[in-house]
Length: 71
Image (cartoon, rainbow, N blue to C red; front, side, top):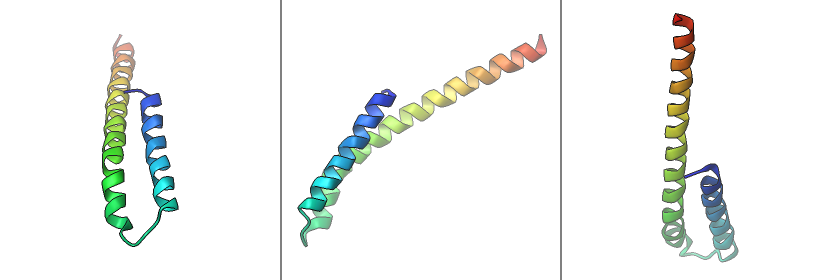
């Protein structure tokens, strides 16, 4: 997963919300949940992967800085 994947997932959610708003009705809440749930789950997974990669990158940088300070 990359930044591009996350942006694409977010655009899918936004597009689906726009579509649901244009077709708004009384039974809308259940339909919204059914339509948005898989998209939000995918977006959440993309964000989790990016957070994990950021944590690994920051940890690596912190180790390099502390290693330089010890030398």
